[in-house]
Amino acid sequence: MERIAFQLRIKAGKTEEYDEAHRHVWPELLRELESFGVSEYSIFRRNQQLFLYMHVADYDELTKRLEASDVNLRWQETMAPLFEPVPDLRPGESQAMMTEVFFMRGSAKTSGRNAREEGQ
Image (spheres, rainbow, N blue to C red):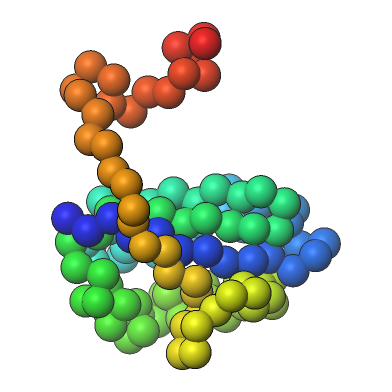
């Protein structure tokens, strides 16, 4: 399983619209992502900055399948007006891919919990 992370950036004044869209992600898109090998997908936002993180069987294969997916293409067309370029994109990148520099696998006892959930 691959852990993939990247950054995107929302246009000024579009954060509420972005958040609202993600409260209502199309069920058919979610089913397709899962059928394409995505087992977990999180999006974190700080102001306009987005950090996206996913677990996927094969990211290159996912990318190919999403590029051919009518559901994904319609979602991307809907979301495109909300984005602006990430400042440090490399040539050819549409999203700022991140390199993993550290990973800690939690124990079954602590997996899926954080300090806030534990009241700390």
